[in-house]
Image (cartoon, rainbow, N blue to C red; front, side, top):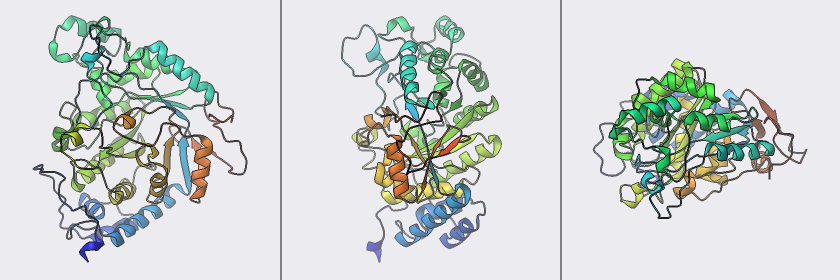
Length: 450
């Protein structure tokens, strides 16, 4: 019988001495019954479902299918058979970063970007004018949204007032150097947001980690930061930089990043100034199933307080070209079964968030479509550019056309729907009425993007 179980034992990955362990006094059968009935799940329930039972090692394929079936049924009850996507562009401003996260190969050490350095580092920094030109071109192609997540460039400040404070402080610990020391000037966060805010395009940008960078050296709270960004044109906030919201995991994979409580504080502040948010988890590295479910609990509690989270996005760790893998701290990312259960338990546990996303950038087309039958209902966006996953070793491309979406979604018997960032605007697409192009963007007229 042991051979029927997938080799994903319910113990922490690696040799890390974590306090959180995937152990409960609950039973899988009770947890599954609660999930099927729609009762709010406890952390113990979530761990039982994620592990397919903590009383036995590995993932039981039959139990796993029961969890997936319950999640898919819940998805149908909550959102029906629609599979949504957004016409969007990724415009990451800079790869310069000194945070040193071990799961990331997106960043480039910011010292390489200094004007005095003659070495070819392969990174980039865009000026506000360059960002505006990129977004303006994509707007003509029909995008609804521009998403921008960037490295923490030392010359980045929130606005001119923030730059004055940083330059007057003289503090070495603030990770600040003036723009003239660099080969490219990113401007300020507010300048970049204003530049990307072209012709009513929706600007989705400035993670909690970036917001922390945008208030360093001041006594401003996160509401002050996000309030100024909103005035500059910010429309919503990506809930990335969450990784796993348990500090003992963060201390291993991203010791230079903000702690769990500060991430939650920033997200609540964004909601308080009227900005919608998303939320993510980046899993499949050193964490275990208890960490994953505690993370879900913290997201659910945040949504109870704010109601601002429009979607939850599980992001499977792409390991091949990251320091965690290169230094031997992990041997692999999540298994297929773990990915399926992460999507399914997210759907069942997060009873106050309507939309769960399957990321084709992380999973590829075939697996991404499979996950739409495990509880997910959103299939990301057209992207047009994607640097982060590609640099970590991802193999699944940078572009998806509306026609691609129509073909794939109808192939699994679901309904393709173009959406706005906040899901308030939706357009069902008739698969028998080509050509297929976006219509919700400020300048979209149905013309194919590619």
